Length: 245
Length: 312
Image (cartoon, rainbow over all chains, first blue to last red; front, side):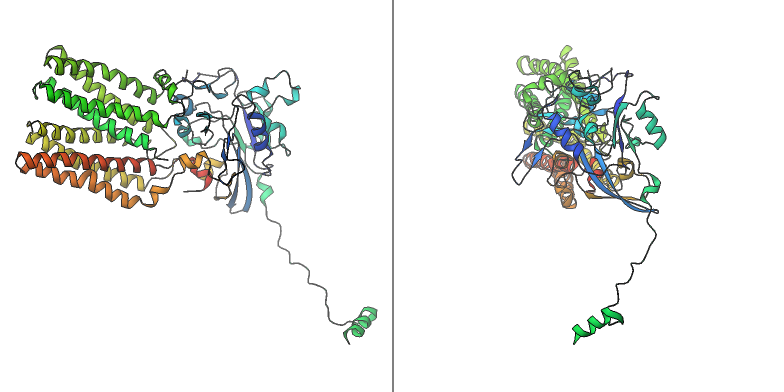
């Protein structure tokens, strides 16, 4: 059913640290690699070696220049499904293909029920859903539902692929509904924010803004002048005079 | 937003079709038009053909049209599902009314009740179509109190102009109806101008700062995640018609409102035969104009996802 659960037992989601993300796109490729064989497989690529490449990705990294009075800095911004508490993408679905799980709050698509009307992608302000023109159904981030409960994986690997692969530890996974969880503590400590809170979707994922000190400009310092090339005294001066004849 | 041809045709055709259906059913139910076989056959046939063609075309943009039947299930939350349910339910009283009228020459008694129900069903279906768009919060041009009355006004306008031409063709033309069509066309024009003026001053419902969580200052996109266009940009970042928006608006002003209004004034003044020609022309020109209006309705709608791409 596309009716939303009144409450979910857990609110699993991601916390993304914009201070430490270096924009390497490792989470993007790792996500693609896992999910093209996972729950929503395949993540179709069209014309992958041609001039008109297109395809389905669950995770995209943008790069922005954020300029304030304190200076300007480059911010890399990974964008994926925020697993909202009020996901309009679910309620607009006419077939019941989109749903939000009561147990952990993950928003999923049942590919066998999706008619590909694309209305859910219109209803998502974040651009989290991408249509697979080859299969004819909508696809989206599953929060690696096939990893996080997977008994065949070592316990430390039971996190979304993007989190497992991030080389700078900029991505964190956990229960944001539990105020005592590590991710909730991190959000509280770093002042994590919701994206587009004014639209009322109540996203679960949080973004940690860049630390205020890390964008500070260094003091201006003039470079030292180059060494003087005019003839000087001493041995080198004698060599210079000799060679200049 | 990308204007899919199937959806443009769908909303225009069903708008006119349901408008005609509602007005014709009401007129017959209240005895304003006689239960003539050909009038019922052609009139209801045209209304239901427009509605059915529109509904069928709306499945044209589906990725998996063979599963379209599933769309009737989620009416508790989804306006798209409600639209499907309302459109199918409307066929029941409309069909009964049509059978009574066309095969038995009857439009009174319990058939009149069916006619009124069909008219209500038509109006409800147009409302559900409007609400699909009005409920999409990421699109400020749609999620506002103007979208629902807009769909109703344009459905009534095109339906009345169609009915006027239809009755004129059967020698039942009425000055009152032509005058109503003229007034609705002018009202539609004023309404559309007001909506355009409002939308031109409209800010996005979010900012690039709130979209990225980067408070204060300016946020400039320096690099996209991908080098080619993706689904999001093709579907939500459509910008072709915006370039020609003012010319297309003038075309709408002319075809959807000004020319039909002039032709309807001719209908009011001219003898029956030129009046019929003018009424038919008004219908055709107005429907063509409404297709352009609907194209702009989609093409000028801006989605918040474009904030991430810095394309506004």
